[in-house]
Image (cartoon, rainbow, N blue to C red; front, side, top):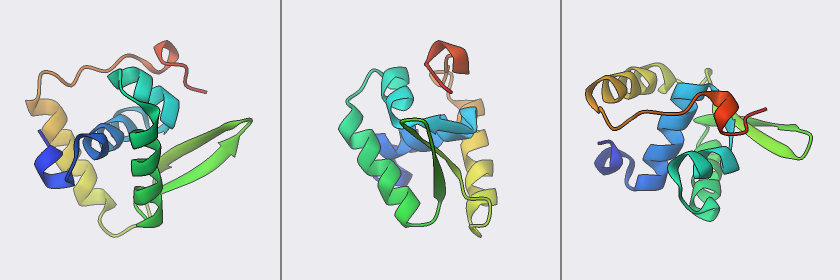
Length: 101
């Protein structure tokens, strides 16, 4: 649904996953969407470089979440909420089913 806005499917998957889970690592996103890890990692890095995401290291995992200091995060979250409500295909597993820390 948001692929056209974000430019690619990986970007959409990343943003929706972070929106739904709050904080997540790349392999959990890839597992959740049954997709390759590399495009997910690259998209996470792009969003972090642009300031939309921040990360922290926990053990050997790098966890990503929204940067609430970014001026566009609030409207972005509103857009993601609308997309989640209107797209019946967005049905994510609970955190404990995808190996979140």
